[in-house]
Image (cartoon, rainbow, N blue to C red; front, side, top):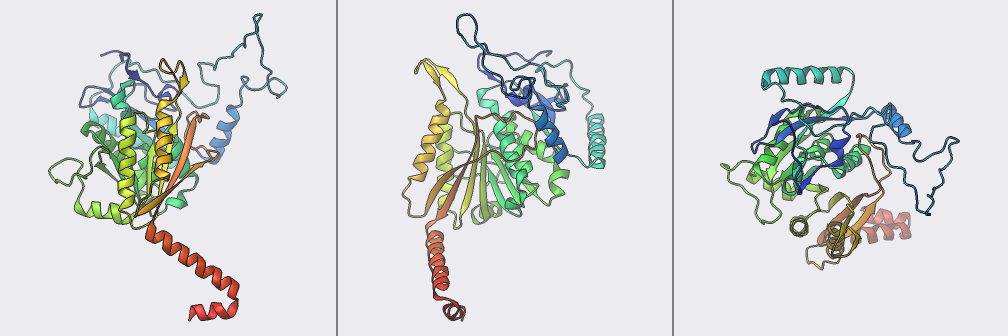
Length: 394
């Protein structure tokens, strides 16, 4: 096999088209014969982030005098569009990656492992933190989880921008794919349940966890790759089935999960429905408040049905969010908030305006009632003054 063949139903993540420091050679074939690549996602330092931000101001957006470039029109009055250059700007540190296998890498696993260990030692000596991710490229729609998408990079940036908010937490990732976001989360959280479906995908994810164990263990975090199907209600607990849960893990999941994350998982309406049903079912059984973080990219497409540009998958996700907020449940309630995406960028990718981050807060009713009572008690102490405060303390 010398070249990846693109079919009508093949999709390719933009992340892989301009990936920093990526391997150009295939590392192996997975269980179903797809070529697997290893890409390195370096967590940028403050100085590197500043340098990257400077290179993003190009001649496409600013004139020679530093001002905005006025739109120009041709003889017919149509806008003249300046297309983005295909080659990366000089000094950006990015290497363009073409999805072409020049030749297969040496099948000797020992040589490859030695090379990886040497690279890891050099990075540690230089104080660099690099996450290595195995992934495929140009997959059919059902295998998009084997690629890295911009939504995962955005959510990883959010985690790295303030790791203290996740310190020591138990976290569940839904639709983890290659595991990039779970691995990033484990640099702060105590336990991360990294879940998806499909043995081949979960095996790739588990290998990625193993490749980055030195990154997570340094922070005391642990990633557990487990099977979780949104279209099924039960978690598999059969010890003979790969990626099953133990009874202790199921109890830990329900008793201690305080954060749920999902990155770029809404592209199929049926799966999106299953995702929200799973989310509601989990949160309804929690006895504590839980924060859910969704990152996604609005992908605009021209549809014959509307004869216009639309984003049906995003529209369906938005309706599900609204319905979740309106749910009348005896056990919990949900609030929804869109978060700003102006936090620092730690990974090299194009943070386009179509990327969004949403926060859903699940509050059990007994916790909400307790919070209201506590709020009224604090208000009474404030109004009553020192004497009331002393009486309350006694």
